[in-house]
Length: 145
Image 1 (cartoon, one colour):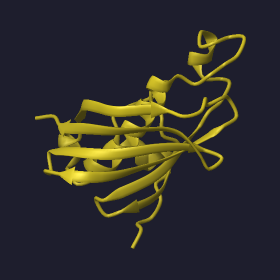
Image 2: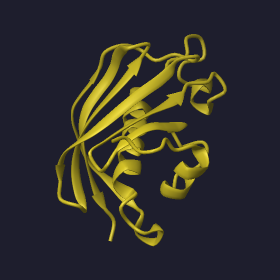
Image 3: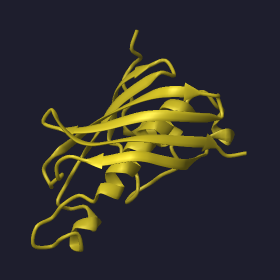
Image 4: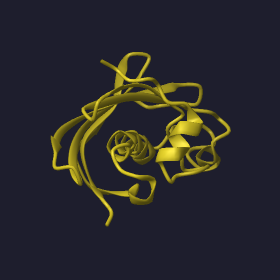
């Protein structure tokens, strides 16, 4: 059974990231420690668009990967007390970008845990815009000690 969605204040209580690097606006579904869905609204006001690219703004693929990793971190960090809530990206495999993401898009993301060792996880992550696959990757993350 899915858990209650998380608003931005609840996300702040889990993730250490803050503006301009917090890349998850809302969590819409959590299923235990198995999967999570959330989104980021892509706004023309994002600082990255001053340089990427001013004449044709495109949200960078590396930030799409970071947004998916942050969503996965929300999923895994919920099981630890606040003083233990720090995870590090340990790997990205098979990253693929299928379509560009532009200002005005809503980046819908989903992350599923495929291997869980409590303090080390492997996740399958996907990002969509208007139902079309925009990016996907296999990511790993480890809890900081």
